[in-house]
Structures are given as C-alpha cells and as structure tokens.
Length: 495
Image 1 (cartoon, rainbow, N blue to C red):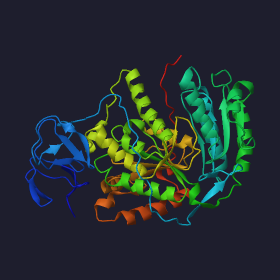
Image 2: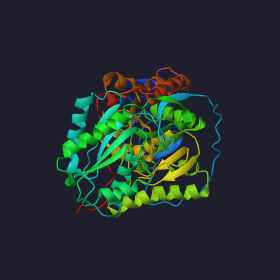
Image 3: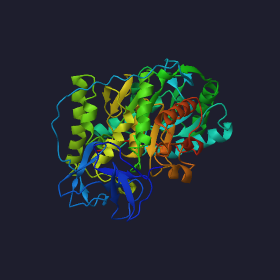
Image 4: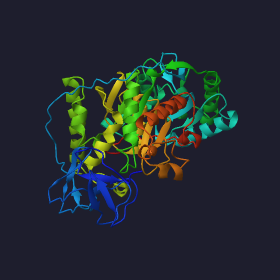
C-alpha cells in the first residue's frame, strides 16, 4: 500500500497516508523526494521548491500561498502556508453541466407514512419547551414516561431543553420560533407535547398559530402557569399521545422520499480524500433516485463557493447563493471578527492548514449535482435534489438546522471523532480506520478503507445499504446512547 496520495495531477503537494519520517524517500511521478522532517498522517509534503508567495496546490486548486521559502520534501502546514482569501468578492455566473449518468434503482426503506403524506424514519415522542424556563419540567416528564412505558412501541421518548424563547429580539426570536416549529412538524416525531410557561416572549398561543394546519391529535400543548400540577397534567397528555404513537407501523417507502443533511466536524487531512468524497457519491446517487440532500456550514464554503455557484440551475439560484456567501461574510464583519479565522486547532492537528483547503474538502460532500434551491436558516425543504442551507459551521447548530429543514438524518464525517447527536439520527462516518477502531461507540461507518485498497464503488454500495438500514430503524450510536441535543443560532442581544 502507498504511504502517500496525490489527489490531483496538478497538485504540488502529496498527503501522507501513514506517518513519514525525516530521511524517508517517496517516489512521486517518477521522482525521488527525501523528507526533510517528520510528517504526520493526513499532512502535506512539498513536491517542489516554493518561493515566498508561491501557490500551494491541492485538489487541483490553490489552497493558499507560501509564507516563506519551502524546500522540496518539507512538511507543509499552517506555519508555512497562508490563505489567499480576503474580504467580500464579486462573482460571475459561469454555469457548468451537472448532468450525471447514474442509473435509477427501485430501492425502498421501511418508514412511517404520516397523515399529511410525509414520511418519517423514526417514530418518537418529543417534549419541546417554548422557553428555557420549563427545561426541568420537560426533562422530568420524559423521564417519567420512559420509566412508565419502557419506550415500548416507539423508537424513543426525548425532551429537548434549550436556553431560548424569551428575552430575545428580532431575528433571534424568529430563529427560535422557526426551529421549534420545524421540530413540531418533523415526520420523525409520532407525537409532540409542547410545554410553555405562559409569560414568555414565545407565547404558546401565537406559536400554535405559527404551526399552521397541523395534526391536533398528535401535537398537543400545555401551559404550565395555567394548570395546577404541570407534571400530573403533562403525564395525562403524554399517556394519550403514547397510546396513539405506539400503534404506528413501518411500511415500504421509495428511497426518493429520503432527505439527508451533509455535515462534517473535527475534519482532518483525510476528510477530502475518503469520507467527504464518499458522501458526495452517495448524495449524487440519492438525488438520482429522486431524493434530497442538504449542504450547510456556509463559512466552510468560503474558498470553494464558485464551484457551488456555477452548479446552480438558474441565475436566480446563483444570486441567492452569492447572498448566502456574502451575507455570512458581512455577519462576521459586522461583529468585527475575521472572516477567515478557520480552520480550528483540531483541523490543523489533523492536517488542514487553510480555509480553502478545508472548504475544498468540505464541499465534496455534495457531489456534483446541480443546486436546486437555497434555504435561509429555519426554512423547510420544498424542492427535491441538492439544497444549500444558511447556517454556521458549529456542529450542533448546523446539525440542528439540517434536521429543522426536514432532513430525516444527518450524515456527519469526522477525522477526530465526536459523540453528539442532534434530534434526528446522526450518522458518524470516520475518515480514517484508526478513529473507527479507537471509538467504536462513536463511529457508525468507516470510510478510511478507501486508502487501504477498497474501491469507491464497493465502499459507496456498502454505505447505501447501511443508510437504508438506518432509515428502516437501525439505531446509530448517538441513538443507542441517548445523545439527542439541539442548538439554536443566536446572533443578537439578550434582554
């Protein structure tokens, strides 16, 4: 097996698959290169002599420039490479052909068909507070119902505490209301109890109106200031909801109904080589079957955004994507923060040196399909195919946003590992086999075999089968451990 990989013929660096030692010799394109220092796995080795200012090429694109002279065989990292990115940019629409020759397969999964025709991949009972003041109440209600029923007949009984719903203004207030609305209407919930306080900004009666035409049998409300004993009243309602939801049965559903969110976190030098490209292949496959995938983490599109813009189906979508990018940059600038303060310390330790490098790896998760719609934060999906969603890169906030858009599950690639899960199944895909072996309680699927001899076709076919199993009821690690969290995007003041 090779000890390095050259991703694109135009690259002037290679990536170490295994740790390399100073004095080792690697042969790249017929040329022997002696390493001048130790290079960790996932990190880059210079294939040429770089003068200060020369571009470093990876994925066939510049990922920054040399801060100083770099010798052939040197370790290339954040100390000797600097981003090329700066400020707001003007963009030109140069559409590319996004036609893909992927055959349609008559695949299905076993899901829950809801009254409105929507489909869920889980049948859970959710207890959602309108405001953080009742977090203790919803937690105790969930504990009591789990103890009383053993969760038999449903996939889970979960409370979702959060800090918001009051003392918020403007967009923050609306963001909270939108995310909580999206949760109430999500088809993975077989039943929902919304618990309010009564005096909060997010008034329960106004929030109820925000739901629109909803299933009043399965979504119920309780305002704790209006009842004598909130635990007794809450349990009475929950028992009724449990009696309804526990009778639901799975049925065969076309794969075209599946909606997945695409997310990465704790990325490393293998993210853009193994797990993210595999997700890209899966995303294209799912879309070819009539399904839907959603890419978010807008700050981690910076440096690769033109590739997404040129895949937009229309000029109108191109303009929306330009606003998606520049509005997020303006948000950084309005808060007097550097736009390109990325990658994270964990990313750098894993081999990612600049935001361009991170973004070019990150955006591979959405394959090569055309962009069909662009969503603002809190918006719900309305168009099948590839969607772009406005949300930050923060793992919990972005994953919550993907679920709130209507994704049935979040596909989360990682080179460092993380245990968290949002309120839909959160599939952890490792970029390297060491992580998969070291964290079996976190990682659900290993894409690291791609640099160990397995073909992309074999790997992606195994992943398709695995995702169908998850959609049909197989629990992910975060579900088995009961890790279910939400995090709502906050940008403004707290009263």
